[in-house]
Length: 271
Image: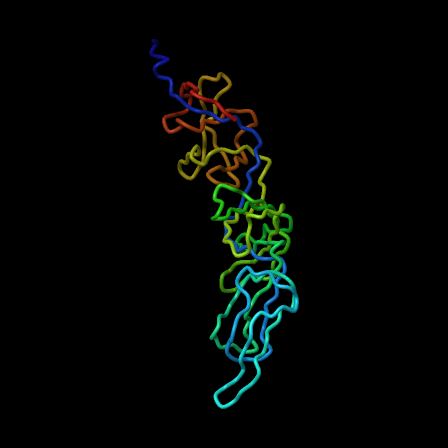
């Protein structure tokens, strides 16, 4: 084996091609009915009895519970709380013996056939929000399954305490496995950065404030140091906005052993 071949530095390269970078926001949300109603008693008192349970289907006008408005020394007839709409009990906020007022929401009834996800997006990302953006939804009950949803509503205000904006997403397809009340992990896809080659951030070197990479020369056997400018980055990949021509091979592994004009051996090539 010649001394020339033993001095070759093994590298891996990536062909410079215009590649889009898909940015996203990770957040969490709650699964809830698209339409729901909080139910309030007509009068305050103590809950005498409850006729429904969480998940019960009720018809409009059905009795939900009875409230005893009596106080020591007084006796009043029981007051019945009725369902104002047909639907499923998605939240049962009281139980027998609790004391309530006319301003206490005792039950929530919703249409569980139509579900949505309500999630909060950090203020720094709100400029990217728009209706129609897609999201991957993962539920704890089905960790390997991805459910696709789209933004249908965006809050017009930012919450001053959490510095987030609320968004509502509806599922692209109905699925009986999705239930109201479930916790959702939301990966919301936002901006797409295009028009430039993309390279792993680990392949970018820096010297005296100047960022550079190594590019394979036309002879295919040596490399040159190339000053570059960078753009947006996502998940460890960054746009090369200047310094590289489409079709050139950029060194993405082995660059720490290189110098100007180093002889190389490509151990693998990719796009």
